[in-house]
Image 1 (spheres, rainbow, N blue to C red):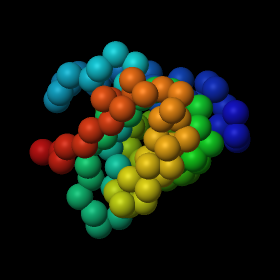
Image 2 (image 1 turned 90 degrees about the horizontal axis):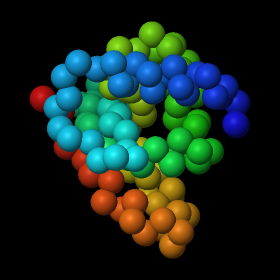
Image 3 (image 1 turned 60 degrees about the vertical axis):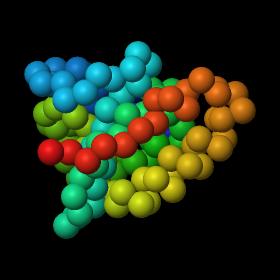
Length: 113
């Protein structure tokens, strides 16, 4: 799986589901994450879980592991700039769009409080 063990991803997802307060409803088959580089306000994204299989997204998870380890509580935080994440998001969307047209509704962004 591109350098990240399956158990590592499941561990991150487990912490995500332990989050006590859900700020907004997350559609079935989607996952909420926070994205933001150092000195940048973090933004909340809701992405389809199928993106966990994409090599670019796996690389972002690897960077999160290197930055924070597996002791993250609550929402998974990706330590990259929001604009860079949006670029990756567009690439993944273009590659998967014609196969999974129904997943478009999962992608939305909101600023964290």
